[in-house]
Length: 319
Ligand SMILES: *[C@@H]1O[C@H](CO)[C@@H](O)[C@H](O)[C@H]1NC(C)=O
Image 1 (spheres, rainbow, N blue to C red):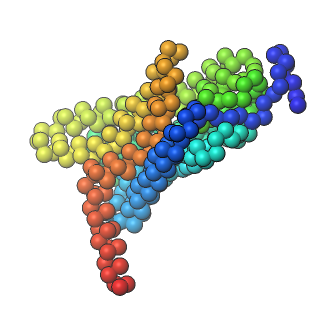
Image 2 (cartoon, helix red, strand yellow; image 1 turned 90 degrees about the horizontal axis):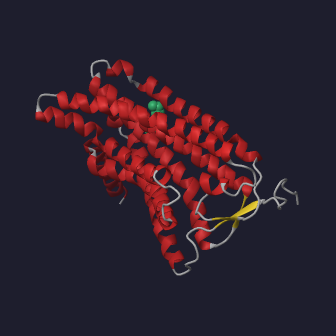
Image 3 (spheres, rainbow, N blue to C red; image 1 turned 45 degrees about the vertical axis):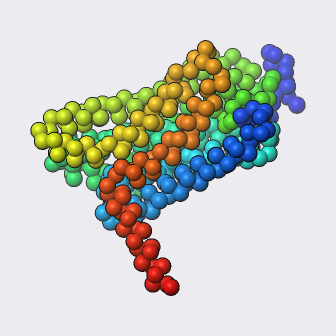
């Protein structure tokens, strides 16, 4: 094995994710909870995609963006949860360092796409409510497609470049990662080199990848909400608000989770709280999207009812 310079320690080639620690009695319960949430997330977001693709009434930029967001959420949970489920079954399985970094890059890329798509969705609502007359010209199928493709290319490209140095990073000392997936902070802690520059770089990349979309989102929504408040009639206000309330809820849940996982924790935050917060962040946000839209959005509900009626009619025809 190679020797790392400086500390004269063996370079590690695999990590061990400690997951939720050593409570064997809890593992089956956790496995069940995560399995159910994973299935619900894939099914719920899959349902949204099916509705957006099949119902002509939902062929508008707002729902195209929603469909793309649901698609992203499926990939996002699929990069984290199956691996987590497997490690709950077979405890202490080592994960090669390179595989861990691949997971990390996927996680970073998809989180950035998520941020950017949420900003694009609020831009769409901003145009629809603040510039209703110019909306068809400013936001149509083509523009929407360009924005979607743009977010899928630029955000991962940016994150991959920002993460490139991780591939070269030597790790030594402890193999154990006290977390349930490969996240930045626990991994960088295991590096044998001085990590100050790396940490700075990660913070800059994370700040650009999440802070810029967040600020744009806030700016769009401030204008949108100001415009809604200026509408004279109550019904008009309610109608305008109902077109963006679902997105606003998803957005709020998402950023509350991000901030409680990545911004609030300091050295003094109890470690026991950090993992549950991360669970919320990676499990709750993808699940909340279909739940909110199916519970609150009238058009999605209508489309769902129509879909169910079609399925029932089809079954009756068969029998
Ligand atoms: C994603 O967006 C594109 C471009 O607007 C659209 O054509 C496509 O149907 C969307 N995908 C889904 C699953 O909604």
